[in-house]
Image (cartoon, rainbow, N blue to C red):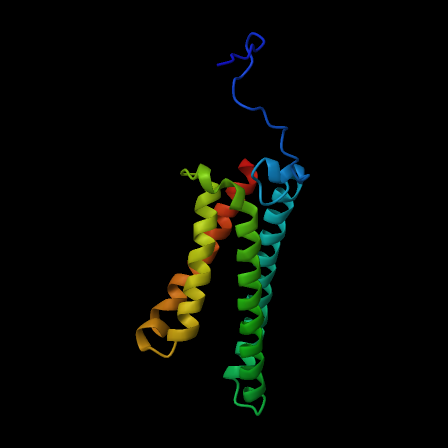
Length: 168
């Protein structure tokens, strides 16, 4: 048998050339889905979409409710306008939630009690309560109690969001 002489510290196994790796985006190497520079702006955009959607819908609803309750022929138009506004309100609520998911997606592994997560889960529950109202709104119980939950809870959400923004 022949014995090969290896230099001191060399590995006796066959050495392979290093793999050629595909160039990656810098943020992908860190495991981030969203580039670091976009996390903060996504949060701001999500908040603004949610605030604008809520305020616009609330103001228009107040104006339209006056017409809807008046004994004029404008009543059917007011009801159609309210339904259209509600559709836009819901679409922008889902858009804001999607942006909020992108805002927090890189922090899923760091879940802990904070205003960040409280605001995020409150936003989810507000959107879910809107969906519940949309699909179960004909029920007398839902119709009676939904608004007494959804509106104050949304106001509380905005207060907690203001604290979150002030802390960050």
